Length: 354
Image 1 (cartoon, rainbow, N blue to C red):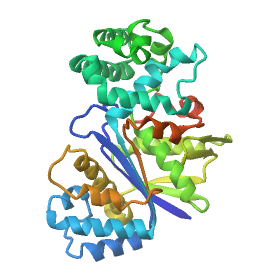
Image 2: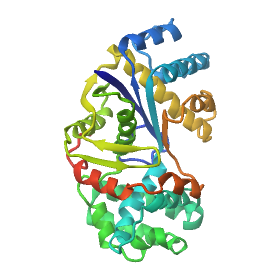
Image 3: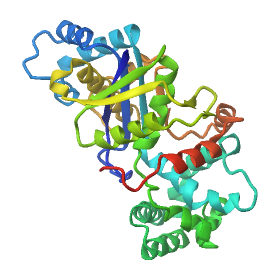
Image 4: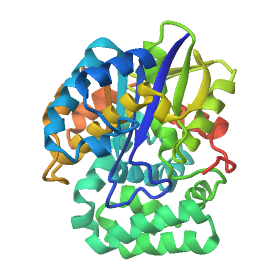
C-alpha cells in the first residue's frame, strides 16, 4: 500500500499569535524509507547525527545548497505536498467565522460567497492596525483567542469590550456584530465546545485534499511520535473512521470526498524512519523560506529558491492577499459554508488530545 510520511513545523496549539513562530505547516511525501535513506546518504554523506533534522542542518550555511538539492530530488521524483499558513491571518479568518458570520447567517446572507471572508480577513490583516487602532486591534485578537479557549461568560464579555475599544465604525461589516450588537449567535458559536483556534484541523484538511488526489488507491500515513503530532494523529483517525458519503469543492483546485482513500495512520520513531526525516527537512525549509521572503528573518536559506522549486500542485498556502479579484475568482462557486458546517459537526470535539 502506498504510504505518505508526514511531519509538521510551527505548531503552537491554540496560540496563533506566537511571535516566534508566525507560520505553521506540514509536508506529506510518498517515499519509502529505503529511498529516503539513499537520498540522505547521497546529499549528506558525512552526517554523524542519529537522524537528519532541519533545525540542525540549517545552522551551517554550507548545508543550504545540499538542502536545496535534496528538495529538488524529492519534488521531482516523488509525490509530495507542503502546506504553510500565516497563523495571524488564520486567526482573523476564525474571528470572521465565529465572531461575524453567524450574524449574517441568521439574516439569510451567505458570508462566504465567492470567498469574500478571505478578502475581508486580508483587509483586516493589512489595514486593521491603522484603521482600528494598533493597540486596540491587538487586544481584540488576543481577546478572541482567549475567548475561544476559555469559553466563559467573562472571556466573551471581554471580547465584546475589546471590539468596542477599536474604531469599529470604520469597518462595521466586520466588527459591528460584536461591537454594536454583542450578537448572541456569534457569542454562542465562539462558546461551542470543541471549537478551537488550533490550526491542526486546517492544516490536515489541506494536506488530505492533495493526498487524496495524489494517491492512486488506498494509502496510509506515518508520522513522528512527537507531542505536537498527537493532535494530527487523532484528527486523521477521525477522518479514517468517517464512513458517510460527502464531497465538497473547497476552492478552484481543491476538493475533499468522504469516505477517504486513507486507510490507516501510524506513529513511528523518526530516528528509525528516514522518510519522516526527509519530511522534516522539507517542511522546515519551507517554513524558514516563508520567514525569509516576508522579511521576518534576515539570515538563512534562500527563501525564493525553496519556494520556486515547488510545482503549482505541490504547494498550498494560506496567506493574506489584497488582490480581491483573484481571491474571488479562486473561490467562486465553492462550498465554504457547507465545508465549515460539515467539519464542525463531525470532527470538532472537546476531547481531542493535546
